[in-house]
Image (cartoon, rainbow, N blue to C red; front, side, top):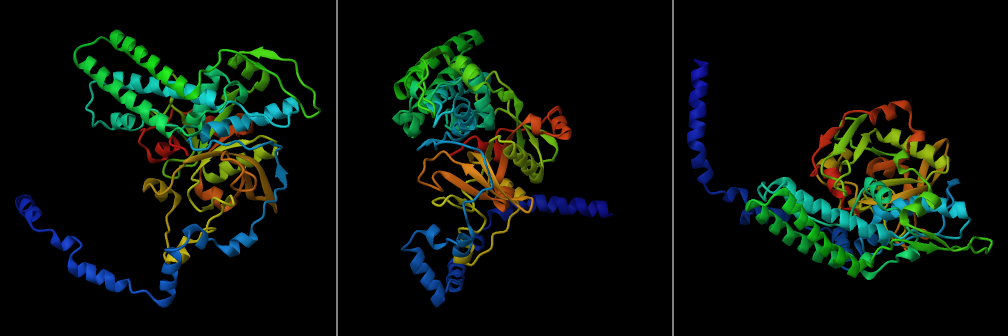
Length: 470
């Protein structure tokens, strides 16, 4: 009997639901009555009116600066790695690349006893664009039969050749193309202000995608499509040369050390320069991630998230934040800089270079509380990794890290001559990735790297923004 009643109820619900959906939805909208109620609730007290006057006439971040926390801040660190100079990516999204090369340039400065040294970021930027263009066109060919509203295709078409990247991009680019000093391929206006160049080349690539799709629909063979792709890449190469200059096949390097001794000129290819001058095996570095929405002590792999088509997609050992912190500390105390990715937009004073929860106290200004866990912030798109920098020091008190010294890549105007201070609480909440040399890893972390990875889609909220670094 209960079973038949349930059937009747299900039938009635099915029959009535179209009628219910057709009823007016005015009670769910912003009716005049609802608006009146809301307006009454927004009556400002005298102190709130003073806040409104201040907010409408001043810079919000300066008004919200927490003076009490600022007075407690200092730029003192009892453990520092010797670094020289600050780089500047200007108005481009190349922080991942600058941070990677900044990690390596300290070695060159120490090895050759230099006052300063900088790699050519423009050189690897050029090849990153070429590789991304090839990845895009190859993916278009491989997905020619899919609907254009397919989620993977939609992601490809949104951003064919953006600036952003991951640590794995640094490794794969250097292993394939080597490195060169900055004066062998200096910056250009398009490398430091890349938005217009990206827009034009992306438009060209989207046009190429329409051509390849039409050719596939008309029965073109894979060989024919590949030949057409090469012709398209020739155009992209020339566009990049016009904007960034042409990468040199070889160059001469000469330097002056701290003593004023000038070296003899020596000719290198880019790969010879990396092997002889830098001489670091980048495969020794592993990617650690703090992703509280996923299983800890598990290897994660983000599909379709590489920049070089023939390489593997990036993998990360997902660890508790305290484990990542301990390994970061171990590296720094041994003189090894650490590349990391974080959410630079959250809880920071950009002008003073202070990363400290509450330093810009918007909550007190508006009289609100926003309480979300790190897992919730990722899942609901409130926070994710969007900027890469390098740890170059730490301040330890009572045996524990209190704050971390950070080398940024936006010139000397922000922070303390281009260096930032990250407090330990901020590390916990907004750091997502750290790159650690495998010699510092305990066996159990090394074992994670041998696991069959858990595959995550390219639209996962954490990887999407990590690839769009600022």
